[in-house]
Image 1 (cartoon, rainbow, N blue to C red):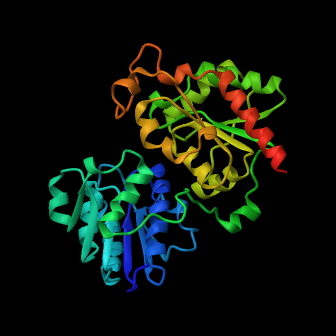
Image 2 (cartoon, helix red, strand yellow; image 1 turned 90 degrees about the horizontal axis):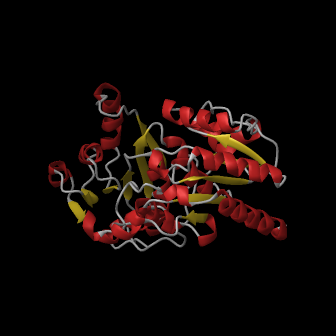
Length: 345
């Protein structure tokens, strides 16, 4: 426990899934500094993932447009941050945007992983070479805090709390017992093939299970879902959520959530929903999968990209990693999870 309460600012300016991966490290900061304040600066679109965690003092949402600075909107937030007089700031991303914001926050001590960018040398007072950090995103964030002699938290589980008011008013648009299958990912190399999703749907329906497909709002993700719908026109589809807050409320009501390595998969796990993750590429296995239990993951068992280089971001084999995971494998895992849930009740 830290003897002197401090005001600490944490930053994460990467993707939605990365915000979920910092929750164990945020908990470590709070356990280290229980009488102090913990503030978190994130892009505005990320804020719903963290804003309902009661042990965070304040979430600072910053407007963001990728590839373009929005100084007119950001400057009032930066000025307010400087008035907070933070003792420390830790930037879990270590990118250029985070470096500048760390510096402008006025925190006396500024820590980040060192990706060997020029701005890092200028903006941070402490840097940990990224090569010295673990591959696992969660363990990387925790190891970064070791530079401040902050021990790991009591639990390294991911954590999200949905909006309590919305939980009472925004019922999910699917019946109880529904298994939600999120078919698209941010990287199409991490996607299970459309034919596999279609076959899995047919197998699950034959087993008397209630499935619903979901996907992201981008045109690429919508096109991939349309490809699956051509194969199984009767498959129900979750409507596009009006907001991330509402989507999290819907997500929590799923009986099981199945997807590849993508943000919504990590959201569901952080909400406490039973999950099945389909992991293929070496990058997914070494960076995201370690936080999950064996029964939560169905992985390609023999992947050339994994054998050759665990840090690759895509599989270029003629038979890609994800295609080696069969619908029968996923159905067997799903039945096992459902049976375990019945026994628990």
